[in-house]
Length: 132
Image (cartoon, rainbow, N blue to C red; front, side, top):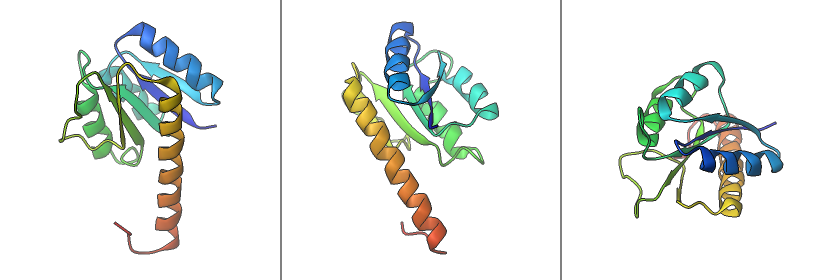
């Protein structure tokens, strides 16, 4: 089963995302901020992370940086979510969605990025040289 980690400091948002992702067949883990998410990830790697950009303790951008820098986590698919008009240029996320998030768009983006990631991994295993 594909595992998603949902990270947001708004409990209502987390609850909606959790229900929708669960209904869509994901195993769901949640965290209320980036710090809690990073602690969870060190013991429970996941397939995909959906995180709010602006949160107390640790932002989604900082969380993404930590994930990209960590051996074993660097390949985790990361979707950044924000009410800001444009995504931060300094964050290496895989997808960006505006708040309030349209749940069907969230689920479609998760499926697309996971499929692309799986295809990239398969291609990398089939060829000695990276294709980027």
